[in-house]
Length: 441
Ligand SMILES: *Cc1c(COP(=O)(O)O)cnc(C)c1O
Image (cartoon, rainbow, N blue to C red; front, side, top):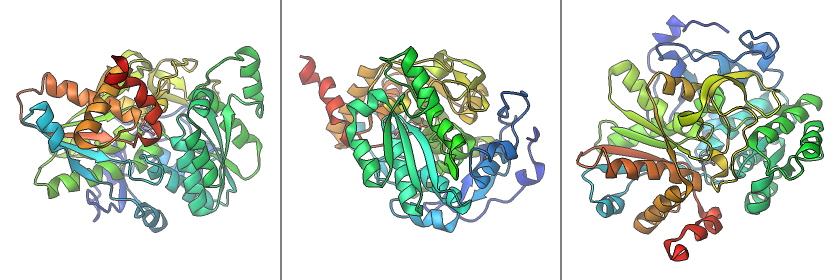
């Protein structure tokens, strides 16, 4: 991979349909950063990974996007057509929450829970299925935590006629069966991970029969199957540059919607960070204005205290999976073998963080806070009791970080606050039940 930013792409004019409620392009922050995103490395040679190496695992176009330094990448019409089923997602002013908090700030919720699976994840699952279909691929394999990504990829497979086989982290497979039913409803197949179906799964089970599983282990299983079966490729729901890229429809819409509401931009953007894709997707289009026009938007990543890669991890090269089958990624990491406690926000149980988001954190463009689980649920309950919206347990971390900010440093300011609500929590009501104040009394 070229280590220098493509100067020509940098000077390209902004195409029509960027920062609108119907984005025609995805935004690649790599083109605007003062230093390029550190390249992924081939674990054998420690050299930057090439497009040819990546396309052994991913669709040709996705491999190209992963290494691209182009600022804007056009969204295919077929993908925009599927997006239009639920996009643009709403940006909602949370006046009742504002009143409840007694704040002078204006709070907006960018709500991804209206997608068919109830989160932001189909924003990348749909183009990933599309590009694999173009390559003549028959089956996609993947891992899933809470089941949001598995259901999203199964949806993508249904849209473009691909088989989808999913390894779900055991803790979630057992505690959240509804997402599995949804994967199956879309025609996908779902296994508990670690499973007996793969070499690596059998190895892990032999050594740790009682493991709760982890995303890293499930990645290893899905990658193994993709590498050993014909016409089969692997799809990743977060972390990689191409996934982050696809999610930038969120932030572009939010900017346009803020303008419609009479706001110039956001002063502070909050999002939860597991692998980093929803927060990057929401915030990178805002950061484009920071980087190229001197806009002043702070971005705050909220991660779970039980899996604090940004606030407690090291910034270094690490594998994306448990056993070391993926390229080496430069990221904030707790180590490839870190197995977090089985918290309710299954989507945030990942040991690393997107290299693109890690890089912006390292450059000081994004700040990070760690949130305890009970604090996150308390914030979600406050939102439900003021606005009626039941957020995903993952999203509660972003809401808690925003409420902390509005009770602390942001108390006396009059600012424009955007909170990324990455998904709905309606399938997580059993989790909420345990955190109700009435249940604690
Ligand atoms: C998967 C998921 C997340 C975490 O993934 P990111 O890549 O960090 O966005 C957050 N919220 C919801 C609702 C999810 O399903």
